[in-house]
Figure 1 (tube, helix red, strand yellow):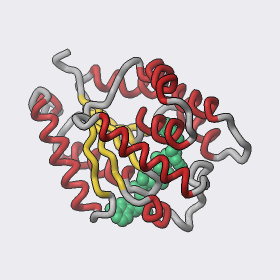
Figure 2 (cartoon, helix red, strand yellow):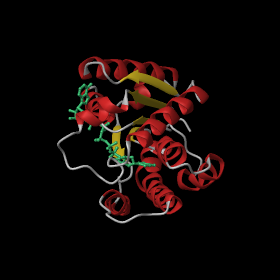
Figure 3 (cartoon, rainbow, N blue to C red):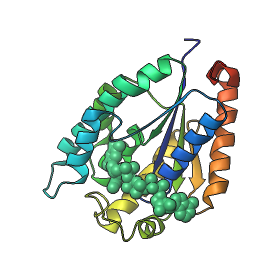
Figure 4 (tube, helix red, strand yellow):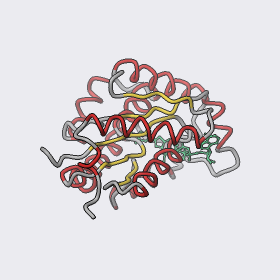
Length: 218
Ligand code: Z5A
């Protein structure tokens, strides 16, 4: 277990800036000589990217459980092929979305019951949970206005109330797991946010085995 790495997830509604922050943190870690891997959900593997296209580029309705099961299947592949091997090799793994997305979107957004969703999700994750989750919170109108003008995917085209339920759901999840979640105000400047995300991550890594454990050998 001495070599076991550290898993950081980024969560938030559309246009919250979580991808910008996740990639910003990843690049900063690389510059500082940390062993780090970036992945995203749905995606991260060949099957995951195909599932992503099915879900986000579809123009046909899909049963909410079918949607959840496809997302969890993609997660299982990502955990098995990318996340778990990198953690076993002592890397810091940064994932743009993870299980909390399923609870927020399919649970709170689509209305699927959380308990069974959580049980099925456990098969996808093999019980793996992030060590640290950044929730980038902001009013959904602000997030949606940031992505205006680009071609919207199937979930982005959902009604405003759906996105509001997702935002509220995320905030409930964060209140329930205060130790793991760090909530950021996504309306702030991105440079400031990247700095904060980096400093908070460093503090957690120091507590969990010290920084040298995660540095590349020179
Ligand atoms: N989904 C799900 O339902 N269930 C699940 O279990 C999982 C996913 C895993 C794809 O996710 C979809 O999958 C998603 C949920 C669903 N819903 N949809 N659609 P995704 O993460 O790939 O897609 P997304 O949420 O739509 O991401 P996004 O639109 O790329 O947004 P973002 O990652 O939050 O933001 P960004 O790309 O970093 O930034 C958006 C824009 O804002 C961009 O122009 C930036 O330059 C700008 N930006 C970023 N930060 C700032 C700040 N601080 N100020 C001003 N402007 C900023």
